[in-house]
Amino acid sequence: TVFVGRETILLVEDDPSVRKVMANMIQALGYRVVEAAGGMEALRTCREYTGTIHLILTDVVMPLMNGRELADRVKKILPGIKVLFMSGYTDDS
Image 1 (cartoon, rainbow, N blue to C red):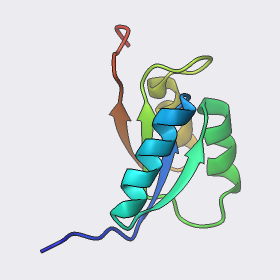
Image 2 (image 1 turned 90 degrees about the vertical axis):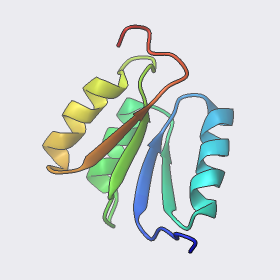
Image 3 (image 1 turned 120 degrees about the vertical axis):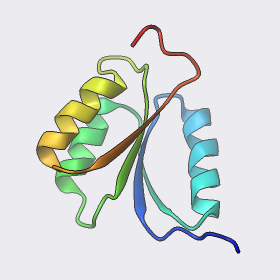
Image 4 (image 1 turned 30 degrees about the vertical axis):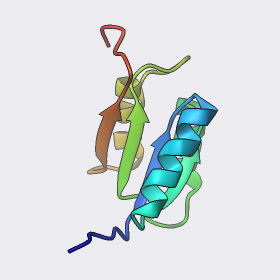
């Protein structure tokens, strides 16, 4: 059985090439992907997106706002949102 997603994922990744590869992989599984290049863009998307965002998939280490801080701020906008952290390194975050 092949699992096909139907939910919307907000992908937050500051590296454009990594973001593109991740978005393509997630879309291939059937999910809708909304992309953000960093924390501020992700917060704006959470406020303005008219559909439902089911999950935030965020890099841990990003300039200006790390993934943990982003998750804390997003949960004030979208209470109950699920967050999945990813990173090639954690920089002790």
